[in-house]
Length: 206
Length: 127
Image (cartoon, rainbow over all chains, first blue to last red; front, top):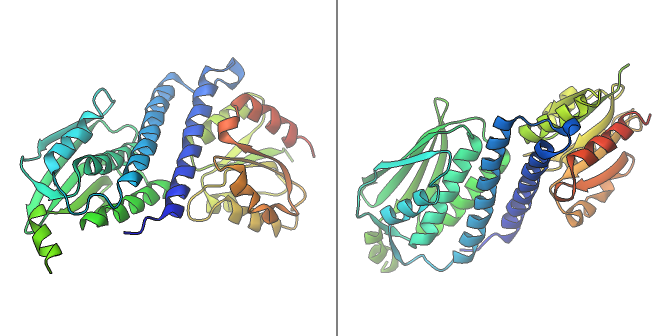
């Protein structure tokens, strides 16, 4: 797969601006009374948003280094989801994985898949900063498995978030997967489709 | 007519902070969240200053500058660019700024709200 460095640089550049915006608002909240335009409730949201933006940056950097390194490996998807979920421990949002059944092996590398799920969770929460309860479920069909992430509102995702989804979709195609970012009756639902690893012999012995 | 500031910023939280900070100084401001919203809300005789972010979505701030250049009252208002882009990226689009009264280009990472208020106060009453 050809890695689109221009697109990647564009996204990182935009993300740096967003992190700087967070900093500006936080500074405004802590500054002299004349510019103290941020209420404490908003400040709390801002600190969370800042954490998400920074996590998004670090995951994008991590995943960019993994490209081309994992396409013929096999990964336990449940382990990847658990890893992603654990990284949100202590965060304002609870991530439920009750509908995730064990032993689903897909094409890819555990940390890279975990990172992709983490990026999607970051995007979902960045769209709906008031999200409290997200759920992750798996559905296995034929030669693929779909990870469904839901529980937040679709609040008109901005172009930047859509760009990140497009970027991650391109990356996950390396595994033969894809991402659908849909608005279902005002709710944001993301489907991450991944090839089961039992397809590897079929794909490489054609 | 009362001079106001047009804030073109897709980050609604930041736009709100800009607006409230200016209000505390007695300056009224209107917020536009993207290119189209900005065009709809822009009034050349009313807005003395446009605070412009560059990354606005499908049609960015450069596109807006291009459109503003064609305005008959293009010299009546000032434009202050506050962006997350680095100066190299801005320099490659310098030709779009010709003919407009660009009073400053600031990167968000090296900017503060106090600085913003001071500059906006100065430029919104300059004409």
